[in-house]
Image (tube, rainbow, N blue to C red; front, side):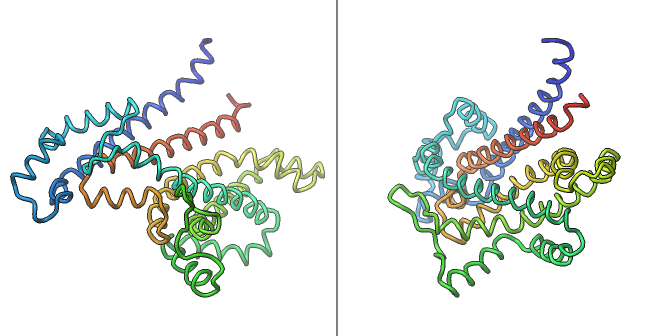
Length: 315
């Protein structure tokens, strides 16, 4: 590799190492926090009538009597090998997540796609028609950003499920446990509305800032059409800011997904996480966090790629 190529890839390796180290640190904190919750995992699983001897035997059988750092290290090494371990109820965590994570990924991914489309199209429309559109979009997006996902979900259920009867209030699945299309509409909207509003505002601001650059003014003086200027001269400059905002929304969407799933009785990671916290099962909680953290890390790296692409002429 040439010295110039090495200099280009070094920041990427540094960013990746830092993010992976942060993820491991977060996993350690989550694992320890759940493990020290009052009640203990054995008592939560066995119930209130369990005797001390039975609890002690259960903890010994599941390695819960080992020091916490050793338990976390054992789980982490298994994670690196693709084995997430076994829950306190004896179920393989890989199997638990294999049936639930695709549904959560479907819900969050669809909401992210809708958010991205809304941010770019509506943000660009706002940029091209700033005067009349601003009177409509400014208050709407401001209000939508301020409303939490579970409030949006409740309002959608009240209007479209209970009021109009157009869509189901609870998720309907097929024989394989996959939600049908109608059941996805309200949960996706509940997630996408607040994040779309935020990203529309970010996109509009990023486009406006990019439009003030000298080369954009030169394109305007040359008489180029506004849409051509937007696509060829403004959007590439604004792309890193838009990508970073959308990448940030991934974390918000994943967190909101776990809440929205409970509102619509959606068969995703939300139910797994709720049950594992009730059972005081640190391995399952950490596994859910690991999946979410890996997804967020991947999207952040994609945002870095967009930034590198937009600045390729300056490197």
